[in-house]
Length: 357
Ligand SMILES: *Cc1c(COP(=O)(O)O)cnc(C)c1O
Ligand code: SF4
Image (tube, rainbow, N blue to C red; front, side):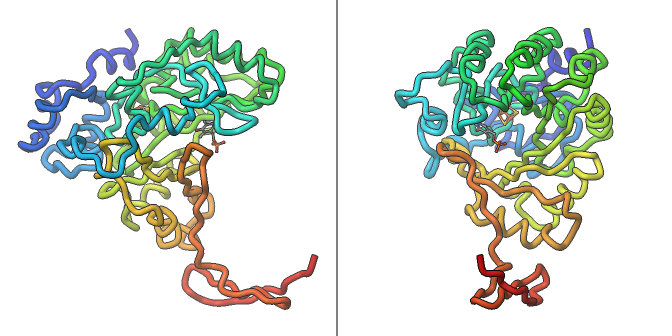
């Protein structure tokens, strides 16, 4: 058995196992005992938790909370609504489509770390929504739709499939002439870095017409371990780029210092910040959500101008009509026929001439 399989076999998913890593607060114990929900993480991730602080950013992402019983703003049957599953446009369950040229292809409902804030929780965590995740059917659909040039393989966590299954997926999708790129969304570089094995590297590496890109999800600097640094380097050495999709989470990463530290540390780990997502209105996760403006304000106050341009993610609200970017809008002060007045991150003003069309 490989290390990563051992990590999965030893999933920290009972109160007794979790108590080997942390001193649980009474509310945490009560939530674990009373909520009927799938939860758990890897020994690796549990080892990064703060032993004594229930507000630890990793604990809050992993350990169920009684607040999950509350739901004021969340939308019931969220995924059906969000992924337009109630419309006439019939597709395989595994295919979610918001755009003409690319799709999200769900290949598994298993994760290494069951994030409490997951917007796909109805499939992955509560498991109320049963989807038929048939790989061959999804591949066939992609083959029949010549406008699809970008296939985003997602889950669950697609890197929990065996090397053979991942190899099969890549090979079959690469055979399709109109596909120009394959992406994987996987939290394994963070939650299960042991997954990046020599066997998987062999599957991913090699020069090919159709490149592979990866986005992972890291929400707090504390998640970035030495093992993750190694896993990312190994992926890059296979010719696979690694980006990050952070989820904006109240009390976890919605302050200027944490937000900046995370983005700088990502770059130091060779991970390129790609998106910051607004925490979607799935039910039972109100306690993780901030006002919508918050992400744009954080980019304004922590990143833009303050530090390296490569550290700048795009802030997006993912909706049923696609992802909508929100920019911090402080920089355009005025414009007339002659010139624009622009403001920088320090509040200083400057001008640039307007060129008529
Ligand atoms: C997020 C998403 C994509 C990929 O979007 P990019 O902005 O290209 O990263 C594609 N399809 C669906 C359904 C998505 O939710
Ligand atoms: S890894 Fe992704 S799919 Fe899995 S629980 Fe976390 S957010 Fe949801």
